[in-house]
Structure formats: C-alpha cells, structure tokens
Amino acid sequence: MSVRTARLPRMTDTTMTLDRWRALTAEQARGFARRVADQVGAQDWTVECRADGPARALFRVCGQEFALVPGGAAELGFDPAGFRPAAALAAAYARSGEYVEPSADLGGYLAGVLSPWRAVELPSFLMSVDALELPVAPGRRLPTPDEWEYACGAGARSLFRWGDTHPATADPFSTPDGPQQAANAFGLRIGRDPYQAELTSDPGVVLGGDGGEATCGGYGGFRAWLPLATAYRDPYLAELLGGGDPADCSDELLARAVIDL
Image 1 (cartoon, rainbow, N blue to C red):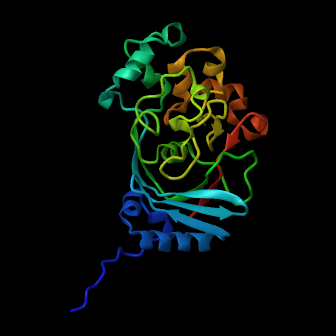
Image 2 (spheres, rainbow, N blue to C red; image 1 turned 60 degrees about the vertical axis):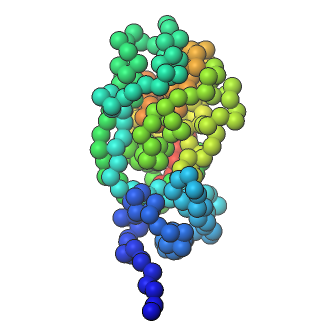
Image 3 (tube, rainbow, N blue to C red; image 1 turned 120 degrees about the horizontal axis):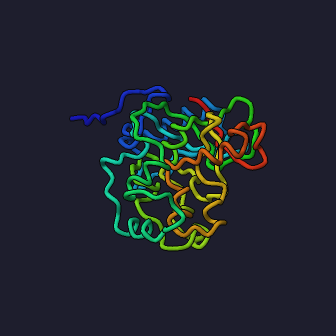
C-alpha cells in the first residue's frame, strides 16, 4: 500500500500569508524560497527553520540582504480596549514623571503616541534586513507605514516586537545585549536604535525611533525605550526633518528597501 504525502496547493508569491508560511514543511519552505530567488534574481538564499517561530527566508540581491515578509490579514496599531499593562511597564511609566504628557493612565498615554488599531491586508514582499542609506536602488521602493509596522512586529501584537516590557535600564544603549539587538521573527534587524528613525512612503510618518530625543534628553527608561515600540510614531520628528521628504533629510534618516513579489 503506497503512502501519499499531503501537499499544500501551489501559491503565487503574493498570496504567501504568514499562516500558510508557518504551516509549510522545511522542504516546502525551501521550494517556495527557491521560486522567489529565481523571480528576484538572488545570488544566494537560505531558509532557517526555527522551533520558536516561523522559518526565516533570506536572500542576497545585488549584494544586499533581504528577508521574506509573508503577508495576509493582520492587526496593527494599539488597541486601548484590549490593553492590559504588565506590572513592570506600569511601574516604568509611573516613574517617568515630568517627561510624559499628563494622562489618566498608561493606556491613555500610549494611545496618543502609538498608531491606532486597524485591520489590514498585505501582500508578501522582500524587505532589506538592515536599514539603508538613501536613495534606494532602482526597482525598489520605500515601505508603506503599514508594511513597516507589520514587518517590524512580525505578527506579534505586543507593545515591542519582543514583548510588552523593556529592560530596566536607562535607555537601549545601556543594554547592548538586550532584546532589541536580536533579529525579529522574519530575520530583520529592526527597531534597535532610537537614533535611527526610518522613512516610509508617507512623508509624514517616520518609524523606528525618535531621533534620540528621549535618550539624549535623559527622559528615563520608559521614554527612552518607547520609540522602539512597533507602533510608535513621532510626527514632530517627521516635521523637523522636512516632512519626511527624502530630498530634505537623506543625511538624517535611513530607510528599508522593499522588493515587490
């Protein structure tokens, strides 16, 4: 009696959702990555299968490293109704004192500095593992704010991509081996340095940092770590840097390059 191996239906690159990607066997994931590599002309590629999360598919294209970001339906932003602050985070907020805007509670404060909750549908794409100097190469583009936020969180609904609390240190630079230094679930080195805010396709949305304001200003741990939160947005930084126009702020900001599939 022969045994037949179940196979997932063949999917186009743009329909590789995160749920489907997680369900693939190692062989199926490598087969999909091989098709993507052929499509984008990658010089090299690899799939890292992990026990604690989805596989990471990495590609080297024209000397730059890119990671697969599976798409699909996702929830982004901050949901005040569903927020239950960890005790450590609430304590850090209480210690922030004069360096935060007066607010009734932590949830109210976060609602003012994080993007609002929303349901989105995104295609799969490749994103540069590291932020790059501008301009991005021909044939590539900047991520939309939704794409950046989704890629940073990699499906996690926590405040930070690694969880709902941050190390009890003055700022991210006081913890050089902290969780911000690890690659995220997609293999992106992202949300690591509040000084390195990143442009998106929306001139008014700069993500991934606050230009170092809180760290340099000595605002304390809560404010210094918060710019690394996945949904954190700093409209004042975008305004200060010419509204996020690459022509005006290429010396101050970096950006992720996106390759459409």
